[in-house]
Length: 260
Image (cartoon, rainbow, N blue to C red):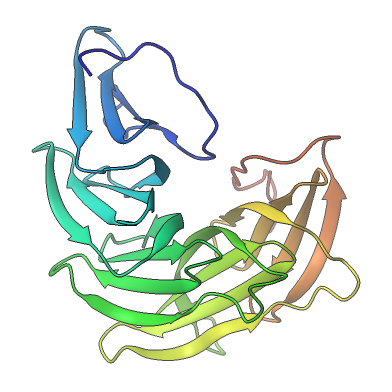
């Protein structure tokens, strides 16, 4: 591969605008492409996968890229953006990777396997070693994780940060909250189900509110569901489109406690 023209768009979340305000990062088959928006001939191809990439993400500062693939060697690769090189190859999954996500401080990486793999790992970015692991869902015949995102530190009863990292996984008829102490590898919350009552959806994308009090989740039915992270329960739901919701960006609203 010498030059890439266009972008397929079949993989949700696989096109990212880099924080340097100059480059875009996207997937093309088994390659990660870094392209200069000001120079169409300036492209870098990160090669390391031996099958199609199924998910990709950037760390908040753009320092790292993480990509996962399908196939027998269902590896997650962490790339150093500045040096354009493979930093870690994480080889604990089988069959395929559903999603990857970096923590807000870039110290941790979450990787979630596809339904047949049904494993979830948290990795230490200082060493490339595993710091937490679990089954991703309880019922693989009726649940399937499709998206995951970190939500900063878990809050205590007085809304103060603890040392535990919080994240949400969502997918086919499931919403789960997790919290991990990365120093001990102990789960504070291990896939606690969020209460939805009769509101059952296949979720596609997740975004936390800036204060981490709420999580907004899109679905295949075109609505956005709001969950209260403290109560671990659904707070609201709004229909926003006729088709499915593919991505969500949550911003502070004009009034305190509101979001747009």
